[in-house]
Length: 161
Ligand SMILES: [Cu+2]
Image 1 (cartoon, rainbow, N blue to C red):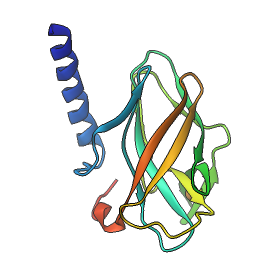
Image 2: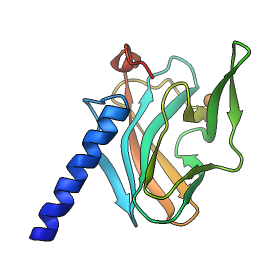
Image 3: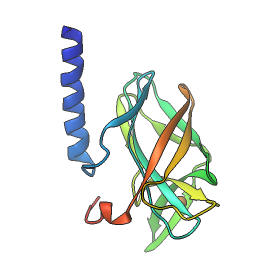
């Protein structure tokens, strides 16, 4: 009982910290999956009028060892880990063949303008209410599958990072 309460209060503190650091997702800030100290929260995909879009979520590494998100697979189209970078005023995306490292007891945000899962060759337009399953391949924790809801792109309008 005491242990549970303690965990809850730590979680609340962590959540408050996350929300103050990142965009406060009113819609989907809850943890959708936890396995072996790896927490996935706030997954979303922007609706798209083409066969391309991007998926975003947060990863919290609560373990004392470094973790690597090595690759991502999708049940719809193809998925690749990308990073958006700006150099000399040019916005470009690069493929992260080595994956993304998440340091011990830290979190990683995949978000617009930064890390994202690039979705290509989607069979049809994504609309609000659709869901895509992503399989995240971690070096230590193996495969974690999450369901990612499609949201309207206006839901994240006005956020600054
Ligand atoms: Cu991309």
